[in-house]
Each structure stands twice: as C-alpha cells, then as structure tokens.
Length: 81
Image (cartoon, rainbow, N blue to C red; front, top):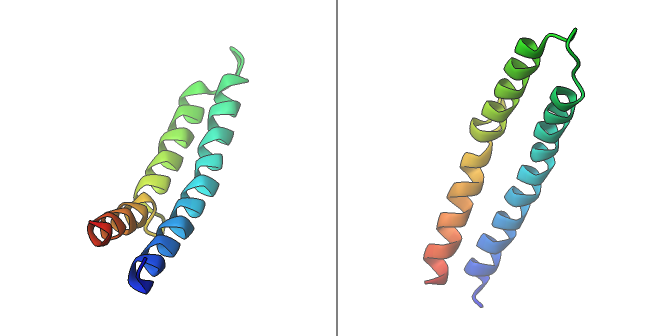
C-alpha cells in the first residue's frame, strides 16, 4: 500500500470517527423523542431532531459534516482503484 493510500485511509478513518461521534447526537434526540409523553412538545422535539440531522449531514458553522466523509471515501476508493 502506497503512502498516499495510507494517508487517504487515515483521513477516511478520522472522518468516519467524527461521523460516529456526531451520530450519537442524533441518537440522543431520538431517545428524547421516544421518551416523550402526551404533554411534551413533540413538534419541537421533531424540529430539534431535524436540525441535528441536518448539522450532521451538512456540518455546522465550523465543520463540513458527512460531506467530508463522502469526499474522503471517494478519494480513498479512487486511489485504491
């Protein structure tokens, strides 16, 4: 394996680890929604979930979200052949 492919794989693994960490944020929002009762503001809980999913997918102010994982994956697979 060339050093370029090794570096691309390292980038892919780091971006995937970041994604997995961010995925936990989605799980937290789903758990809150799942635990909701009839007196809870389900509409707001759904909106919070939607916002969190969007941030994980597209990134927030300082991150690029799953887009960076997609780019890292594409670069790695292209270099790998």
